[in-house]
Image 1 (cartoon, one colour):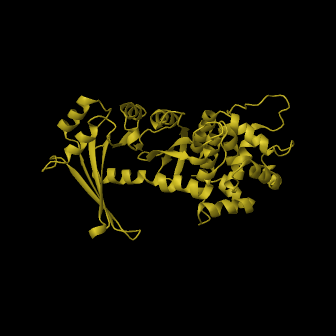
Image 2 (cartoon, helix red, strand yellow; image 1 turned 180 degrees about the vertical axis):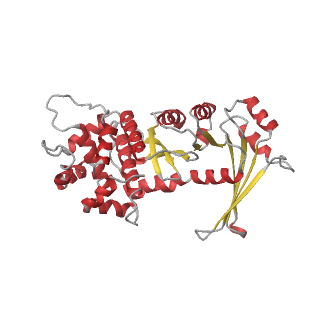
Image 3 (spheres, helix red, strand yellow; image 1 turned 90 degrees about the vertical axis):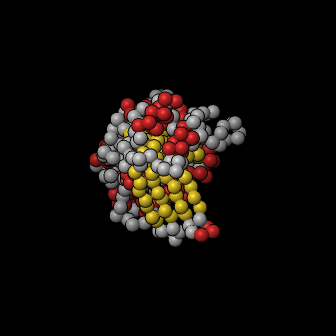
Length: 375
């Protein structure tokens, strides 16, 4: 595995071991690395991870010191309950940086996902919610942040942004992230934003929709159109965008939005005749009024649902995971996302993620390819 071995060790070497140094048999890196390999190969719980370790001990021993053997399932569970998830998230992001460099113009979609089965009624704990950052053009999970208990995504998004280098990138966020502080942070970090607008910001939705509602559109309005019938249902998406000074000044007079350059309206028409459905959405952005670019970028945002959230549920059974105690659900969510990154970018096998996980469990050489993939 060579270089990738080194990157795993380097990425997680600063994660603090929460255990006492007395009778410390198994190095923390062993526990993390075995878990990553096991999850890539189809394991979904502590007992399966331990069993994987025993079955693959000769393979794992090629890059780990296993002189003390394979940790028990209880050890795996305890360690991931106690390890600081913020340090794990930093290690995860450092690892993605080793194999991937963000390029100018990348669209980074930020969206939340509930880990439904992490709800623990016995201990009065609600299901945890993770906010994910997804590089849409390159199908790569960048990092994730847990939403604090009795809070919402508004508090988690700034912490997640702090982990990321978003210079020259476009950040897209649904309406809950349409906040002046979040817009300002994105601009200060050198990125651009496209924020969905709903009715959570005073008169903002009314003001943006009014810009496109009159009998005549603003004189500088730009227009683009997309047509899609790839799933047997015709879909037409139309985009109008304007950067008219008086409209922007009116919005900023009520509440200042850092770097605001354009207002956007997108109308989606699905089906025909009696089956026709219409959806109108509004956005604000720090980008110029390039309707084709904005329509494309906003469309990319929803790839996070199909390429990340859906795959985590269908191929990794994330919504059914019974891991619930302390920090373990959050830490295992990060491990699954690391596994998904590696599996998505090993392209020699033209099959789905579930099939690739099986192959990795059966074939050590294929797992080597997955672990050494370069994005």
